[in-house]
Image (cartoon, rainbow, N blue to C red; front, side):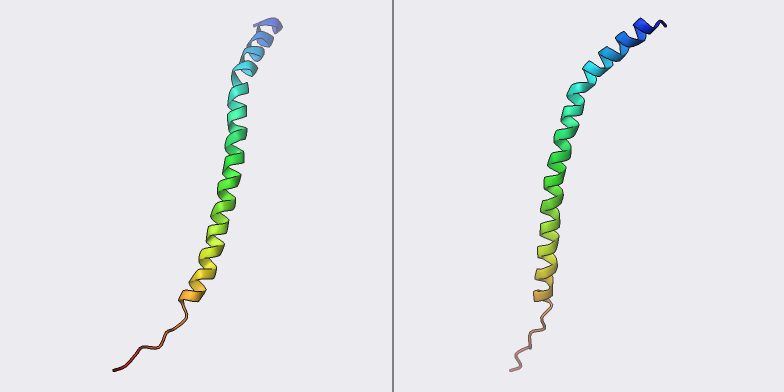
Length: 61
């Protein structure tokens, strides 16, 4: 293959991959939001579980 053919192939590939790169970027941003939400829920669950572990006395008749 000549350099011109290789450059043409590179240009086509770059053009075809551009939308995919944009989508990957968007997915990364969304994943960051999801990760933050999950970490917040895990923190909440950990704090809540400590309150639930409080032993309540049983009422004896």
